Amino acid sequence: MNLNNNKHNIEIYNNFRQQAGKAGESVFPFYTYWSEGKINGSRKLLGMFIQELQYFENFLDEAGARVNKKWFYFSELVASMRNLSIVSYILYHSLHRYDHYKIEEIENISNDFAEEAPSVLDFINQSIKKLFKACLEEAKKLNIPIKEGMLPKRNHLDMFFKEKLPADYECNQMEGEKEKVLSLVRKLRKAAKMSKVECFGHKYSYDELMELVPLKIDEKKARKLKNIVHAVQSDYDTYVKNTVLESENPKLRELRRISSIPLHLLEAARWLSHFYERHESNICSNNASDKLAELIDRKKVLDIVVNFLLYYSDYFLQKGNTLAENIMSAYAEKVQYELSIPKPLGFHARPSTYVSLIVNEHGTDVEMIVDSKRYNAKSVINLLMAAGYISEKGYQKVIFEGDKRVLDDLKILSENNYCEDQKIPPELNYLRILRNMPSH
Picture 1 (cartoon, one colour):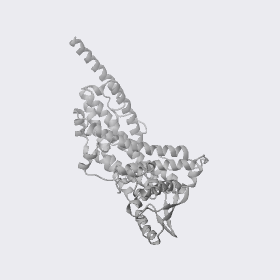
Picture 2 (cartoon, rainbow, N blue to C red):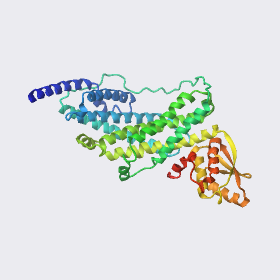
Picture 3 (tube, one colour):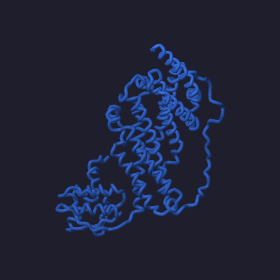
Picture 4 (cartoon, rainbow, N blue to C red):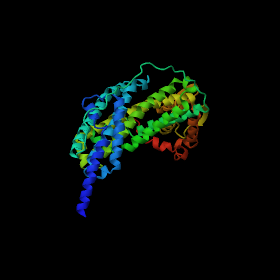
C-alpha cells in the first residue's frame, strides 16, 4: 500500500512540475528585465509582471503548494515578489504624479518626501531582484522546466502625453452639493485624527518600532485608514467632480489632489505591513520565513512602513485636514449664541480647554465676542485672555459666533456648566477621548 502511495505521489510531483513550468512560463522571462534594470520606472512592465505573478500564485495556491513541504518556500517567494511589486508600482506611480498632487500650502517636508522616495523605491526593487533570483534557484531544485530568454519584443516603455486635453466638460448642478462636500471633508478629518491618535506623524528608532509593530501598528490599521481616505475620493468623484460647486471653489480640487498622496502611501503600507507580518517578523516563524529574512533586511522593511509610508501619509493627511477646515468654514451655517460663563471661576484652563476641543473637533472657525473684542475659540490661550477681560467687566454671558453645529455643542457644554461640577454629557462623549489625545 505504501509503495503504491509513493508511486502515486511521485507521479503527482512530476506532473505538477510540468504544469508549474507552463503556468510560470510568462513569469520567469521577466528576470532578464530585473537583472538588467530595464523594469525600473516602467509601470507597463510592472503591471504585466504583477498580473502574471497573480495568475501563477493562484495556480500554486489551488494546487496546495502552501501546505506542501517541498513547495511551500517556492510559493512564498512568488507571493512575496507580487507583494513587493505592488508596492513598487504604487511608489513609482506616486512619484510620477507627485507634482500634480502637490498644493501650494505643502511646506519643505514635502521635499523631504520627494528626496527619500527614490531610495525607498530602489530598496524595494533590489529586494524583488533578490527574491526573483532565489525563486529561480528554488525552481531548479524542484526541477521546474524554465524557459530562458526575454519576453516577446514589443514596446514596454510607458507612454506619456505631455499636453492636456481641454477641460471643457460641462459642469452639472447637483442637489445637496454643499452637504456632500461637508460629509466628505468630515471623513478626511476623521482619517487625519485617527492618524494623529496612532502617532503616525513620528519617526521611531528600531527598538521603538519593535514594540509598535504589530502590537500597536499593523496591516489592519493601515487598511482601515486607507479605506476612509478612499471613501473621501469616491464621494468626491461621485458627488463633487464636474459640478458647478467644484468650478467655483478651487480648494475642492486641491483637497482631491492632496488626499491622493496618503491614499497611495497607505495602500503601500498595507501591502508592506502584510509582507512584514507574514515573513519578516516573529509572528509566524518557519523555515521559509527565516530564509526570506536572510534575503530582505527586516529592519529596513519596518523602517519604511512606519518612518516613511505612515509618517508621510500622516503629514499629507494633516495638511488635508487644514484644507478641509477652510472648506468647512466656507460652507458653514453661521449663527450667534449667547451663552453663560462657567461658574464660579469663569473661563479658566479646564472650561477653556473643553471649548477649544469642541471647536477643533468640528474644524470650523468660532469666535467668542466680548464687547467689540473677538477671540479665537480654537485657542485656549485666546480664551484665557478673554477670561480676564470678562472678569474685569463682571459679565455673566458672552456671545459665540460660528458654525451652528459647533455652537449647538457649546450650548450643551454651557448648560452643563462646562463640566465644572458635572460629568461630561452623553452628547459630548467625544470629549473624553479628545482630552486624552496627544497634543503634538
